[in-house]
Structure formats: structure tokens, C-alpha cells
Length: 387
Image 1 (cartoon, helix red, strand yellow):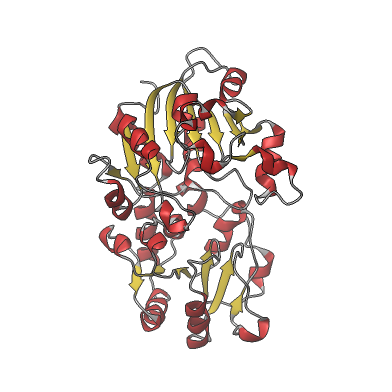
Image 2 (cartoon, rainbow, N blue to C red):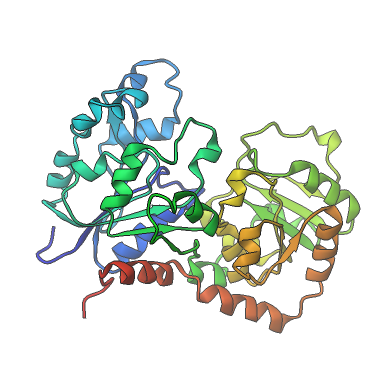
């Protein structure tokens, strides 16, 4: 590591992916842009799974682990880790006392490889990455809890003893929503809410032409970009497309639920599947309305949707399902409580004048990842840049 270069280790359950960019990577990229040496640690898994024909984990995680580190860009390397102990064992007493030393590859070896003895900042997300606090020597510790992890129904406990220890030791604790802050307020009263953000410059201008499939779809176009998972209200989207037959609905993203048969889909519903992240700005620039059709559940109530900020940066008027967090944040979007509300919201959005779209971009400009990061670092007394 260069003399005087600052360093940060960021733990995030996701890995760098050509189709998706989550908050951990976005913040890692901002750090790297300002000259920090950055290690991005993706979610760990049990080592013994790699010996099975069907390891039960994404092959991209196994490939990252086998690569022993993947350089994403200058100053930024993504690592995958495995652990000798099964998940339920490594966090149990008394194993938790030494389990931090059983990662493969070992964290001390990774730090040596990157020229780090003690990092300036250790950045955790609190979803079972608690052992890193003992394995990575650090000057400052921040914890950014970005979801209601118990909403994933994986046996996660918000009050786990190691979570209590981690929050108590942190120099700053942040959540993306008031809902999640309130879940942890009994463990740490001084939690700061800082919502997700946007790579504003990437989304304000579409440098590439619109995706080829989009050219064959007439306007107006309403778009959803993101995972089509349990929280996606498919029935709502199908009904919305039937109620507004002159509007073309584009749902672009990976499916983790069963896709409906084509015979059940209205002709104005288009399902291109996942698109490369770099093509998303051009897709949004070629559409007229952004959609967030989510179901009402504990996981969604704790979400700060990145896609909303990306829609706004692209100048897209946006219609979202209602949940209290979006209302309390006073985002410049329409909130719909039912199908009729969505229909009215989309119809109104289609009449949005150009000046109003510019105002949406101006709002998103103030929500960039860099602005969010500066706010967090100011809370813990760490400057992003020298001087």
C-alpha cells in the first residue's frame, strides 16, 4: 500500500456483479475514487459446502472464493471467504471466541497481501459479519444496517449477543430507514438514519443508445428494474397492465419466483430478464414512468429502495406502493395504496412536464452515494479526502 494511503475494509453480503450494484459496492467505489485502498468482503459460507456436488450457494460466490481475490478497479479488490465451522456453530459460545481465526483465506493473510497492518476504517453491515471485528485490526468501526434482516426468515436474531457487542463497540451506527433504526434502538440509542443513494452522474445522462429490445416497444413505457422476488407484487403489475392497455410495462430483472405463462400476460407486459447494470441508465432514459410495485411485509417496510433514486436521477416520475418509510422521507414520488392508486399515479406521471423532470434530477443530485458517505464519515470524524 502506498505510503500514507488510507484503507477501509467493507463487509457486504453481495459481491461485485455485472447486473447489480448494491450499497456496499457503491460506497467502496467512492472510497477508491478518493484514493483509499479498499477491500470488499462478500458474504462467507461454510468451507465444507465446496466439496458437495450441489453446494447450496451461488457458484459466483464459490468462484470468487477460489480466485483468492478479484481486482475490480484500481484500489478496490473483492474477496470471498469460507469458514471451517458451520454457520450455527461459529457464532455459538464458546466457539465465537476463536472462530474469527478460521476463515479461508485468513483475514491476516489478505491484509498482508494488500499491504495493510491496521485499517483506518472497518465497515460492517451486522448481518452475521460480527467476527470480522476481531479479525481485522482497525482504528474506527462503523456498522451500516441496511435491511430488516429478520425479514429474510433465515433464523436471524436482531438481539444476537454478537450484534449487541458489535453495536456497542462501533464509533457510529447507521440504518437506511427509521423502521430498522427502531428495531435496534434498544441496543444502541444513537443510531443515525441515512437512506440509500444513487450514482447520480451515471443515471442523469444515458451515454449509450437504448437497449435494442426497447426500440420495438411503443411509448409510453412504464418500467421496473430490479429483482422479481417474493416482495414483488406480480398480481398488481398484471392488473395494472390490463387496466392501462395503451401503456407498455417493462419488468427488467432476475426472477427468483415462478414466471407467469405467456398466455397469462397482457400483450403490453414485456419481460426482458436481467440487463447489464451499465445498460440500465439508457433503459430508464427511454421510459416515461418508474414503478416500485412491492408487497406489504416486514422486509419491505424496512427498505430504502435504491431504484427510486435511480429513477429520479434519470428524471422519471415514479409511482410506488405505499409504506410509511417512503412517506416520512418526503420523496417526490406518488404513493399508491391499491390498484386504483397505481392507475391514477401512472396516468398523472405521463403528463409530467420537462421542468418537473429536471426538478426530480435536482433532488436526486443531493442523494448521491458520495453525499451519503460524507454524512456518515462526518458523524465518526473521518474525512473522505485530505485537506
